[in-house]
Amino acid sequence: MTTANQVTAANRTGPACKTAPADIAAPASKAAPAVLTAVRAVASAAVDLVHASSMAGLAAASPRLRRTALTDALLETALAAAGLVTARA
Image (cartoon, rainbow, N blue to C red):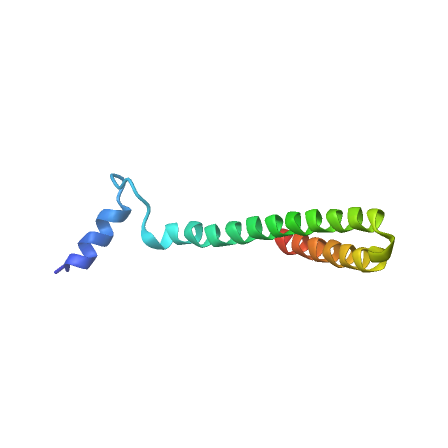
């Protein structure tokens, strides 16, 4: 004797089924957060590079703040590189 769950499972995997079973479709739904994480890492790296370029401009414009601005630009460039490495992983 078949139960309702067995019939439902059989109907989902038959040739007339238009959607994949839940266990087959699960990997695609797990990939979406990984893609969003990569997009966020790239966006964060872009923001870090914009900040680094603004600090390089400040260093060129202000001799008094040159050391601080260049240190900040170096740090932001390192953070951008780390974000891009994270996005590729």
